[in-house]
Length: 173
Figure: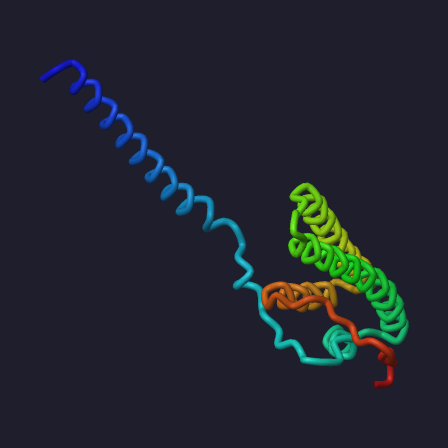
């Protein structure tokens, strides 16, 4: 056998050995480490209503009157801020479509708009985190667990925190 053929065979053997080692390492990693990571499916999922989410949360958490008033205030602030960010995101999406429709599309402008949408999306997620954490601060330990279950369910269902426009829930609803 020629030296060139031997070198090729050696490299093939080395590559196959590396693939086998990485496969074995992946299997061991998943078997050992993944079992210690809690999965979302282990957390109780709650059936969410199609409407009146504020009332649902109030009832599920068994909020006191004062807690409910604080939740309403937080919800109003969140709704105002989240609506503003969502409108800005829609404006950027419209600007993208206008740019795409031009005879000579400016790719740099598209990248700028995409970055702006990403920044706005991050801002919306941070508003949601802050909203959750502010609500959590109002709750007792039992309520915190239930609040987490509600938010976890919303996340797993891909739901957004949508709040009704117009009339706000009252404590006696």
